[in-house]
Image (cartoon, rainbow, N blue to C red; front, side, top):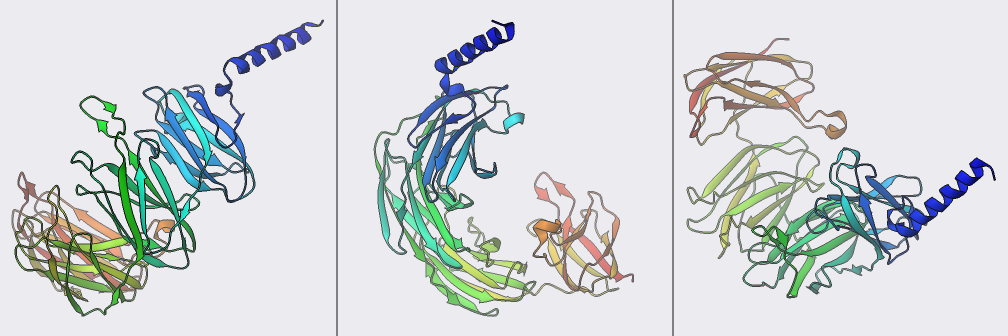
Length: 484
């Protein structure tokens, strides 16, 4: 027998023996639903792939649990073309990972990659256990109350809601308390293909709220409810789940009252309640939000959302009871023309909200002062007044010079300028910020900028001088000149 043949034969026996001894460390294991395998992440082998055959519509769950302290697990799911279509980091208890429930988009072979956080650049190592399972999801009906029990055997439950068009919903629920402590229960909302939408945990009183919940695309969404065991910081270990916890929640549509800019709304909200108002405005409109309430009541807050579900502005009654009113002016309405205003009672820290919060809220056009080219203005900023804001009507292509001068030794020039935020901001990297001045010493500072388009530009004047107790109160002079 030739040496090469003997060598090949012996190598085959060695490889076969290695596979028989440690099959879970193989680099391309094939799985079926219900399988559990073990493996190890090392600095040399920081990715271990597992393949399985799936059918479009299969709902899968992949769990990766460390068997040795130190491994920070991470899971990827790839389709037959090798594209990453889902992933998870720390979705389980601690740094363990849970991916799914995930609905497979097509028939074919899929690859699960068991790896670690930061993969090649990561440093954690250790043995793990990985389970691939097929699961079921209950379809939700709006305004129908869901009751479930989470215990040591069932720590997760998933539900699906079908959406058509843009809908604004509200999820509210409660849970039983154990040993005077709120159990660690969280709600997560994702698209059916796994894209994260939002999440929330129960509060100190055992209540849960996702308010509002925007579903902006047609298709299926998942609501995953998870219970995690307590982590004992003193002992540095996870405490096992002992007693069951009952959870109840309802997903309902928001009933919003249409209003117009210039309207004042009044009402009252209790804990877990919200009042909803919708209004329309041209993108770039600048508004003023004011509100007040009777003394001694639990504070409330006001939030404004754009039609893609992004919160971009808000205000509220201070929790310390120092005043019973607020003003937020100016607020630039970006990203759309349909807006939602939400008024709700709030809880600060460990103090539970109680009673009814009566509110009086006015939505109006901005009253921020207007700057004129060549006309100097003066003001005071600092202390409780974080900034003073001015507006300037500019033209695209104008070159302007801004001069900010200290009028007292307690003031150091600070300024930022912003315009309309374009809809393609994420693609272009331009978010509407034009320029800024940052100083820490009294004096005079100038800035020349070219305005990119016609519109209203906001000048935010701040103070660069501070002490151990906060920003100092100082006086300034501001001059804007059109150079060309």
